[in-house]
Length: 318
Image 1 (cartoon, rainbow, N blue to C red):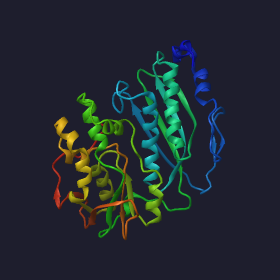
Image 2 (tube, rainbow, N blue to C red):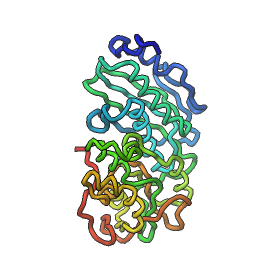
Image 3 (spheres, rainbow, N blue to C red):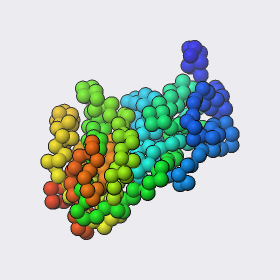
Image 4 (cartoon, helix red, strand yellow):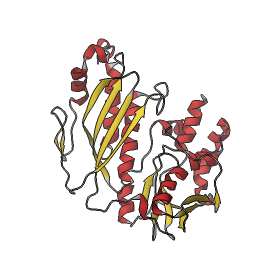
C-alpha cells in the first residue's frame, strides 16, 4: 500500500470504498452461499438449526489502541464470540461485524482490523459474511456469530448434576495477569501480556466435550467463579473447586502477580477473558481436559476447597 493510501481516513474514503477494500479478495467456505455485497448474506444451515450469539467491544472498556494493534482487536473480537459457540458444543461458521469509528480513523487501520477478524476466523474455517460501517466517537466492534451443532444436542448451562466432574480445557488467569502487567506498564512477561490482547480459545474442544457427554458447559469470559455460578444457578447445584487441581494455573501467573501486587489466586479464579471451556461430565473427562472440581447438592453456589471464596469474583459490565 502506498504512503498516500495509508494516510487516507475513513472520511476521505467514504463508506462504500472502505467496505469494498475490506471485502476484496476474501475467500469464503462452501457454507456461504451469498457473501458480502448484496442486501444480506445467505449461509447454509445443514443441521437445520443455527446457534447464534452476539457481543460488543468498546474502545476504552474492552481494549485500548495504545496496547492493542487493530489486528489484535479483530482477532479478539472473533475469538470471544466463537468461544460462545464452542461452549454450546458447536462450531462457529460465519460472522457479521458492525464497526463504528471516528471519521479520522485511518483506512489502513480499518483494513488491519479486518485482517485480524479474518485471520482468527480462518483458523477454524469460518469467514466474515457481512456487516456495517458507521461513524462513532470511538471504536466499537459488534459481532454476531452463527454456528452449527452438526446434529448434536446443544450443551446448556442447566444440565449439571450432583456427582458430575468439573473439568476445564485451556488456561486460566493468563489474560487477567496480562491486563495487570499492561496496566502497570510492566514490559516483562511478554506471553502473558499477549494473552490479554488475543485470547487462546481451545477451538474444537466444545464438540469434543459434547461427544463425551458433557452435561453443562460455558466459556470463561467473566472469570471462573462468575461463569460457573451461572452453571450452578441454572442447574440448581453447588460446585466445589479444588485449588490443588488449579495449581498449575496459579504457578503460571505467580511471578506476574508478584510484580503487579496481585493475588495469583484472584487472577485464576476471578480473572476473565481467557475463554477456556469449563464443563461438567458424568463420567471420564476427555483427553486434554483437567479435572478441577465436583458438582455437589444445592443450594446454588461455587465453593473453593469447600468454603465460600472471599476474593475477586469476576468481571462486571456495569
